[in-house]
Length: 432
Ligand SMILES: [Zn+2]
Ligand SMILES: [Zn+2]
View 1: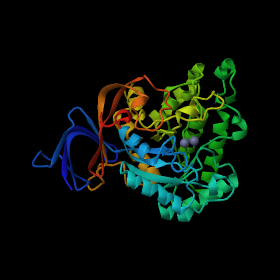
View 2: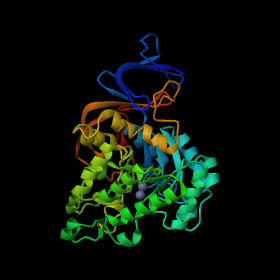
View 3: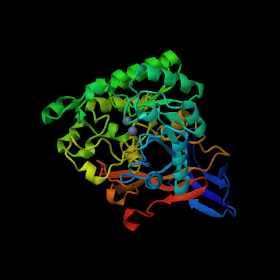
């Protein structure tokens, strides 16, 4: 395989504490060295004024295949991931059928290999058929390659099932990723319960629905020694609960999606279903606590919860439309525009939350530019200004609340295993 020199970029690799301008050599698909002069390599990529990061990782993606290929396929979802700068993603198992057997894990792996875009890691179901009654074959799923377990889309409801899931996952050192929501409290809700839901006359989903289950999960993780990863954290209550649990060394981690640190429930004034997600957009005070949680390290990971829905579904009335938005192609721009530019996070901290931290939680050998590692690299243009145009998304779906937003910064060149898999401006939906 060819040698590639990425020249003169600002290399930021939190896994090695590196933040400096250097040349990075890639050979035979691996990271081969730093400070290497330009000298006969097969290819040179000029990264002057660019940031060279370990390939970004999104640990929360819905690829919809099998079962809902009208919303997304593994091929289109992984193409969208590349366009967003992600070289590895973890997909959620709420497909149809759900990913709860060895054969279904293998199907995802085969489809991902066939697509040949980014790396795809599989999060498998905690319960058989995602029904919450009976534990899935955790051991068998681990052997098939599952990196974690979740019934996302829905919480693991039964506390006894959850406790046993922790015990099993502990044997294989895998985390449980839970969508924390007490359904009795959110039934019929379409938005965050608060002053705004009252003003708009829309049924609400109280913050307590998240807080109560985050507390339960943490207590069960603590009791069993298991690892809980709180998915898409959104309330000040759960961030405070997680912060306290970390202080007493419970094995808890958490993630946040860009919409939860960017938007508030005020957006629902538009009655646009692209602002309908679960957990819902919260109030201003919650967003402030989320930003503080990002800055102080309580929130470990930035992920997208990429949830594609075909246009005809999202166009329904607010109460009928499904929850969720696409996120892969706007995440990096939102992080740069809303976290890095205002100085809430510095570059190394933001990159750690999209590389090293998710890699550690999932136990995957990614998120690093150390010599010998797979050459998964994201070259970021931090100054590019661009307008979000859903027509140009690589994703099959366009359900984003950020259409028309001007964002700063984007992935320019993305390498997976030493191969250039994406360059900005490359094929978009309009060109296919
Ligand atoms: Zn969820
Ligand atoms: Zn999700």
